[in-house]
Amino acid sequence: MIEIPKELLEAVVAHVRREAPNEACGWLAGERNEIRRVYPVPNVAEDPRVEFRMDPEIQLSTMREIRESGLELTGTYHSHPRTSAVPSARDGGLAAYPEAVHLIISLATPEPEVRCYRVEEPFDTVELTVRLPVQLHPGGNCCRLAEKSGEFPG
Ligand SMILES: [Zn+2]
Image (cartoon, rainbow, N blue to C red; front, side, top):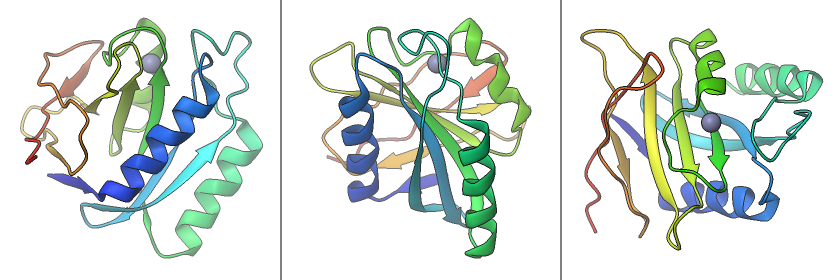
């Protein structure tokens, strides 16, 4: 199970809302299964409205900063400004980080929808616990990514 504190998820949602209608992206750093810090990374995709590509230099410096801070690279996040929080064909690149979890934040509905994915491993799925009034939907497998979302306790 992955836990993300309410204020960090709010920071993620605020970041992706700020960048809309472009997709926004970043890294999540944590300790054990709890996300402790959020690192926005500029999206330098050719068409940032439909895909994301993390700025390579900032991505590297972010990953270094996370390691130096003693935290782990828990996962990534990115937004889907107009579509659901389901991995798109372009999100196959997330498989490059098999140990990370991947949050997708959809802004297609009035309330942001957040889903959590991990590259599929038969006995290793991810549950996400969120404490924020966002909709957290269970979903199916997609794009070689497996999802298992946790409950939203209110
Ligand atoms: Zn995507």
